[in-house]
Amino acid sequence: MNYILASASPRRKELLTQMGITDFQIIKSTVEERITKTIPAEIVEELSEQKCVDVAKTIKLPGSYLVIGADTIVADHGHILGKPKDEAHAFAMLSNLRGHEHSVFTGVTLCLCDNGMLQKKVTFHEETKVFMRSFSEEEIKAYITTKEPMDKAGSYGIQGRGAILVEKIHGDYNNVVGLPITRLYEEMKRFCQTDS
Amino acid sequence: MNYILASASPRRKELLTQMGITDFQIIKSTVEERITKTIPAEIVEELSEQKCVDVAKTIKLPGSYLVIGADTIVADHGHILGKPKDEAHAFAMLSNLRGHEHSVFTGVTLCLCDNGMLQKKVTFHEETKVFMRSFSEEEIKAYITTKEPMDKAGSYGIQGRGAILVEKIHGDYNNVVGLPITRLYEEMKRFCQTDS
Image (cartoon, rainbow over all chains, first blue to last red; front, side, top):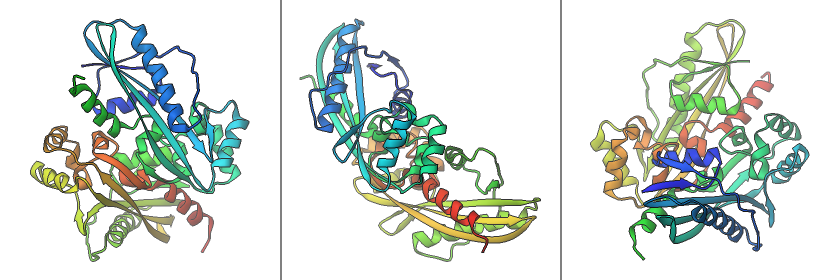
């Protein structure tokens, strides 16, 4: 099987490699995201599907290949947190996340293609609960100076310096990083085995 | 403050770097481990203290420095799992860990030294619950061929291919890797601030 990761995220690239998939192409979707849902789990599924189907329909490769699309968001008390617009926005997000639990959702879509034709697809999501400690404003400022928050949903990277903001998690750690690799492994196994 | 990591584990070295401590020496303890306790939390505390105090008492450096010692074990239904003796042992451990929750304990000791004299020390531990999925014997065999299990307590590395064996965790992820860095950060802050 050939694999195509429909995401330019270096973290997703690393996670796919960690799973044992070392030979894959990265083709980023250029589709404009359209959110029609309001529930976090449905939003990430919708966006992962848009990206994956866009890449699956655009590229024309010989033989059989699997396109993997994903989208991650942070949800806190019903608010959806994407990437911060600027440092002040990152500061506000991190201030709000302190001392309680929020959720990280990653949606994944798999598209199985054959000779440039989309044969079938499946979409799923995983939720991980993240409990942040009551860090200080000085700690937020020090963290923002590292620039790490600026390209991350929710303004933190659990796999980087952001780890010391997190007290504990409940669920799949790699789902917070950007891909629920255990679930992905199982879904891929099932999806590529059946002929339906 | 100067830091000394009393552990040769490359994973602990990476985690200390991830915390933002980039300038530290690695000095491995050569003391023979003596286990007098039976409770996992007490065993890891005891072993981390033996390693840390050994290094703190052996080295003689000028000025003020902090020695960090750590020990990690896996506990499953009251059984302590260390590193596997051989591949058959790794297979047996992984077979037993399937489909249920076990605990990973890391004990950490900090020794504050001044001009070669141990001034004070503190010891703590963290527990993380790890729930493994019901993977197959073929999957265990494939995992063992990667050699990854051979130097890991419990025969798996959650930060490597072993991630796809783990369904979810409850607690600090980095504690499973080898150092509870959020707790360590807070304990270090407290420990190095006070003069008592």
